[in-house]
Structure formats: C-alpha cells, structure tokens
Image (cartoon, rainbow, N blue to C red; front, side, top):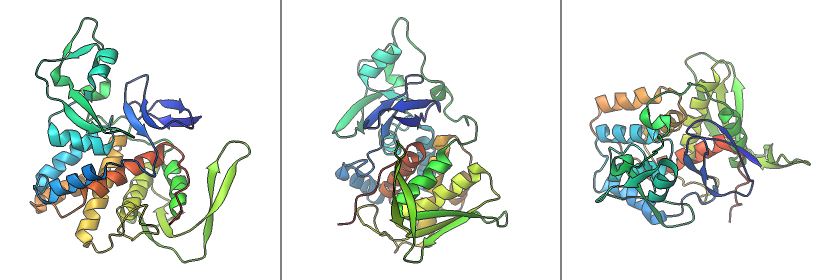
Length: 332
C-alpha cells in the first residue's frame, strides 16, 4: 500500500501500489490523479493548443490576465494544474466543478436546464464533462460542499509534512543530489550540472527486502540549512522548476525538453510561476506571489513562456511530494 496526502484536506490515504488514475478522498471529496509519471497527460494536441492559445490568440499575454490565471489555478487544489487551467479558459469564475454523476451521488445536486458543460481531460481517456456549482440546484437533503470551496484562499496551516523529504528522494531518480549547507539568510539555493562519474543510491521499493539501485548524479542542488522546512521546500521547488522546464538542458529529451536558449527573464518567470502554483496549492505562502505581482506592476505584457511546460512541471512536483515514484525509463 502507498500512503498519499489528500490535496484538499491533507488526510493520509492508503492506496494500493498498483492504483493508477483518479483517487477520491472519502472525507472531503477531492479528486486528483495518482501518478503514472512517464505519461501524465498524453493528450499532446491539447497541450500544444494551450501554448498556441497563449502565443497566437494572446489569451494570457497581458500580465494581469496571467496573474489572474495563476491565482485561479493556485486555489483550484482539487484538480490537476492542467485541468484547472482548462477550466479557467472556459469559465474564469468557476468555483467548484464535478461531473453530473458526482454532483448527484455525493452532494445531492442536479444540473440546471441549459447549464454549460466544461471540458477537462481524464487519465487514459479522452475528456470529461463537468459543471460548476453555479449550474446546479439543491435537491432535498443536499450535502455541503468541501470547506475549501467556500473559502478557497485560506492558508490551511502554512506548514508542510513529508513533501520536502519525498521531493528530495524522488529527485534522485532524475540524477539530482540535494545537499544542505549553512549560508547567509539572503541565499536560498541553487542548481547546476554535476561533475561526471558520481552516483547515489535510489530506493526502488521499501517492502522487505528493500530494493535500491545506483543512479548517476547529473545535477547538484544546494539548499540553505538555516532556513525553515517551508522555505527549503519553496527553494527546492523553484530550483527543480528550472530543471523540469528545461532551463539546464536535459539528460533525456523524453523526460523534459532542452530549452537552454531562453532568456533569463523567461526562465525566472517560468520558475517563479511553478513555485507559486505548487506552494499555493499546498497552502504555503512564498515570495513568488510578490514576484509575479511585482512583474505585473512593472511590465504590462507576459514574457513568451510555455504554459505547457509550467503546468507539467507543477503536476510532476506535486506528485513528487505525495508518493514514491518509480525509475525513469532509460534513454533510447
């Protein structure tokens, strides 16, 4: 069994090791996708369409519009970041969406006549049609929606559990070695390519007898040991965002692309976006919100980022903090 943390209420759930697809919390009703990381969202045409929406249609070229999108995805903790973005493009004012079946089964609410369906993606399938709570009507004995829906901007506790340790362990499979050292309070961390010829142990299975393997060290990630666990987590998310957005290149282009040709402004905007979304969806305050808000004040236009890369990096980092992930597929 795998222990997962619900993104809605932080309850610990026991899930079978072979479980893949949608996981539903029996307490708060949150749904999220249990990782099959090698192909988390295989609808390539839909992801490409989002980047086209950004670059051609100018949907989020305004920095104000982009900040609104980021805050929407940040508070829509019940859904994958990619699906939260799809919801925003179709209904920016949505509060809480479910399928018609789930509305009736779990909340005793029916879909209103003339309601507008919202299209989202489902794992290992085409699409799902969901409806916002504003397009539903209560039936007798209707049940309340989760508390996080009524107060989506609350910070649940501002602390993390096992996300930091889980992310550090899962980063090993991508050749990332995380080391802590004491430094000044103004320095948070960094990531860079490592010297060749080094290896580190990665746990494949904790079941008796435990299994592990040696993974080549490709990247060195440094954290400031004097910072709190929450500050360290915000830093490691930011630095790994640079990695998974392709800013340092890639050891295997099937894992993430090589995008080293980007400007410094684009690289930082993407990394700060990922950090803001991951931490906000976890209920942690970070300086990334101030960074994005400050950018909006300074610059009316959003830099030419890849929304696909940002959302996929958020999705991956969320999974890294929730469960043990398997080995990457070897380079072909």
